[in-house]
Every structure is written in C-alpha cells, then in structure tokens.
Image 1 (cartoon, rainbow, N blue to C red):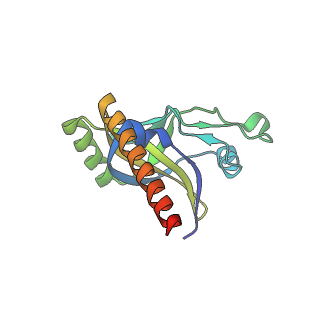
Image 2 (image 1 turned 180 degrees about the vertical axis):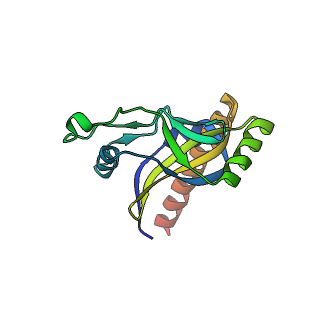
Image 3 (image 1 turned 90 degrees about the vertical axis):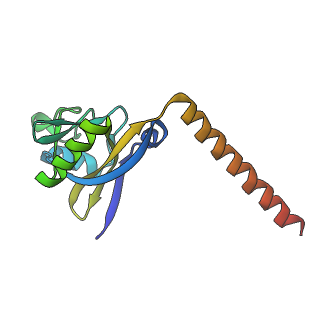
Length: 153
C-alpha cells in the first residue's frame, strides 16, 4: 500500500525513549483531509490522551483549508483516534502501571486513509539527552575519519 508522510514529530525521539508504536486511524472532517493533502499540519507540542475507553489526539495543528469558507475546521481541535478495544485496553494498562505517555510520532496517508503513528514513550532526563547528543557526535566524527582514511589510500 502507498504510504505518503504528511509530517513527523522529530522532537519526540529526542525528548522521549520510544518503547512501542501503534498505528491508528483518525476521525477527520473534509476540510481537514484537504488541508492534510496540501501538507499543512504540525505535530509539535501534541500528545495523545486516553479518556474513558477512547484515545484522543490533542494539540495537533491542521491549518484551515484555504477554500473551506464557513465549513472550515478549528485548527487545534481534539481528534478521536480509531483503535480496537483490545489495543486501547493494552495502552491503558501500560500507561497506568509504568508511568508512560502517548506521543504522536508521524502523520501519514496510507492509501486514501489518514493514519497516525503513536509512540508509547518514557520521558528522557537531561543527562540522557546529553549522552545521546554526544554519542551521535562521536559517530559522526568516526564516520568522517573513516571517509578521510578511504581518500588517502
């Protein structure tokens, strides 16, 4: 099936350690889908919350559609995720017992359907973030050195 990424939450992988991911559908209006097809969305500062036995995306910013007129949507409204009861129960169990949080990682089209990839995450501490940055910089330096060694021979 054809997958076209609309937007990703790059900061999520920096601020959280992603333990598990799950794919969910979204309940959207027509103008929201048209705006998403144009690529006008942002996952920054967004999160997912479990209310009762339903999962909602909060803070996802989908820009109003230019041609929407009076039928346009509210940009940051609460949007319902489509998950099976079994998946929701599993998420509730993990979030309540282990102190995890739900973070939207990616918004994309799968065929003609809009999907969101939700990550089950644990927050990183400041020193974890610094260690990850140092590790990435060290790897970059090693790759650069290998490239230089390859040129000399």
